[in-house]
Image 1 (cartoon, helix red, strand yellow):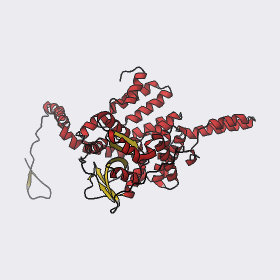
Image 2 (cartoon, helix red, strand yellow):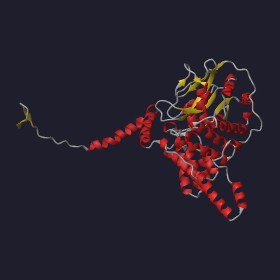
Image 3 (cartoon, one colour):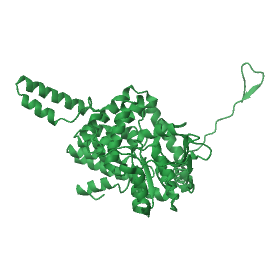
Image 4 (cartoon, helix red, strand yellow):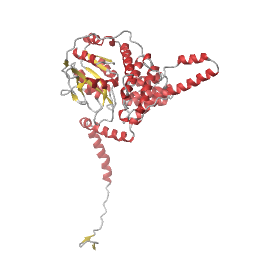
Amino acid sequence: MLLATPGCAYPRVIMPRMRTRFSPLYLLAIPVIALVVLVVYNIPFVHERLAWRVDNFITQVKYAINPPSEMIFVPQEQAQIEQIVQATLDSARASATPILEATLTATLPPTATNPGPSATPSPTSTPTLTPTPLPASVRLSGITHVYQKWNNCGPANLAMILSFWGWRGTQTDTADVLKPNDRDKNVMPYEMADFVNEHTDLRAVVRVAGELELLKQLLAAGFPVLIEKGFEGDGFDGWMGHYEVVNGFDDARGGFWVYDSYIGPSSDFIIPYDEILSNWQAFNYIYLVIYPPEREAEVSTILGPQWDETTNWQLAAQRASDEIYTFSGRQQYFAWFNRGSSLVKLFDYAGAAAAYDEAYAMLPSMPEDERPWRMMWYQTGPYFAYQYSERYYDVINLATITISAIDEPALEESFYWRAMANLALGATESAVDDLFTSLRWHPGFEPSVAKLQELGYAP
């Protein structure tokens, strides 16, 4: 049939419509295609190249919807404790019972209003490194550089520093032990030291309060050093933690040579001393040294009094206290945090909780793009401090915020500590659920296994 088209000199042909049948085979093909895609995606070399891209996409979507920098933990129980105590004291004064006031005051933990350096235990001796003439530059060779696989910073750097000592394993070997679930977000320094001490013929020691001069002393003696530091770069959502292997220094150029599992070996650049020091502060200047057993005396001599762990933590606490009054902004936040972490190791849980309170109090006024919202991925000191100060709801709230502010809650420590707080409050069922969840993210995680066995469960 031909019809005249308005405004056009040519006719338009109208064809009858044809109905297309939808074959049920199309529906059957969808799950088959999905299965093929899933199988291909999980082929190791394909997964290795695509997993981080998929993860990054999912992360970006989630963080766009729910920005983690806006999820701020605010300690509540300390303020409540202070209010209750004050009300009790007021009541005691009104009833003329000064003895009660004295008793309550004596039993109170230090509050966040006065957690200053005076509470820091003093080292038993004044530590000083034996002056040793140092060369102007040192650069240790023999390290095999590897680029980290997806989410594998810790195992990759551990494999690199072990390669210096002739260890022939790979980052896959270290990861199999350190993080059986490859989605686990972090490996702690103590876990890497345990790997060295239990799975190699070498020895490892972890200390804090590291100094640039100490790094040089170790390098000059032939010991590369693994450090944990803060890291920020293009393509990342704010501050995060990162490991590096330091293998040399050059005073003329004012910096350290490093092997970086993300950036690469620093064959063409040096990281300035002040940059290393600034980023290192976020992790209490922590470092790991690996050595053959027969060379332990050399390492202990270089470390001096800091070979003793208690002295080391006392010095770290004092250093953090000094930095609280030296720094401002985010560096002051790290100083308060470091003080708390050091006091935890010295079993001063109330003092540590007060220091963490001060750190967290700084976050609301800190610019969002500077907030280190990933801090609890790497450190667990606040859980110890609040748990053993019997501030169980603060433990639960901090763990819940930490878990909620992550694209995938692969943090076994946060689930473990939330479980411990719930157990203290009598919520056994919730605690057991969290303990099993922690084992999902880190199969064999010893604290969770032990606690479940204690409760009568078979992990």
